[in-house]
Image 1 (cartoon, rainbow, N blue to C red):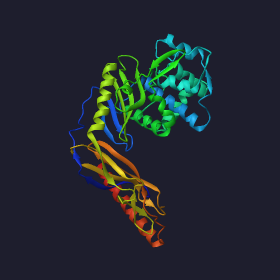
Image 2: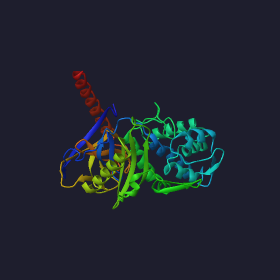
Image 3: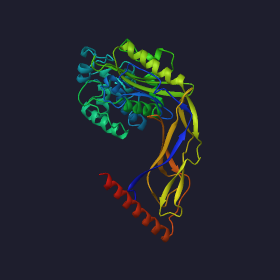
Image 4: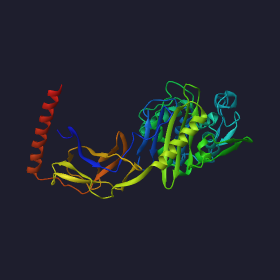
Length: 391
């Protein structure tokens, strides 16, 4: 009967603040604003709805290229050849955004990255995909496999450049998660998203991200638009006084609306939230039951200070819970990840961090293990009886 129940323990209540709902209104039909350090959601609206990513899909294309560079399998000075497909379907004559690559020419990976994230070049995206995986279709398979690895559970990809299609759907929450991973994992390559212009083939193009010129600390990532149905979308990040916020928003009616609403959301996040300490690293937060151990429970702690972002001047309470699959089975090693703590402000998760065992628990005596076995059997029987009554 071990692991029969998913145990949720230690309901904790803090009282640092009331907020008026989320305290902000936006015309974006789908949006989410997240604090990069804590993972706290400051605002969300339709964040789990599937939307058309348009050119914001190029963040995933860039992530796969960055992964190849970080592993050493590719170098920035390596060159890829521009295929007829990249030139014809992604080039300037296709009517979409382009880096102005010439068919059968060769371009350095670093230039292609700039063409991808600054010019939003469809031809750059296709050339990178073909260069990395041999064919666009093979690259798309990698995109979907990578999305699964990164926990982008509600998104799927049909091409690396943003063309609409039934397989090309993302959620704002997944795109924030992807952007946060790129920022944290590839700081040396993330910087390309913040460059304000790029010249290729004697043609200078400005970065399509309007937030870069607004003096709000924005340093990436991508905009996207296909038609009126998809609307105007953006995945953006900004840093101010040691804090970083990440925004994913879709469905604005115009490019101007997209820029203004994104700016207002980011500024609201910076101005209206402050960091509050909840637990220090190493402080006991709660306990977890242990089966068959020399002790019946083990204290749980975090390996880092835990903080939450709270709205300034608010009075809404935070609710918290410790979640783990249990009881834990002895022996339990000190430092082993055994659960997580989830803190909410109303319906929004403001903190979700792993917890570790603060000390080791050795296997208990035979009599102790026998007692725990009997206890587990009885608990499972009671659970089954109540479950049957509720059917």
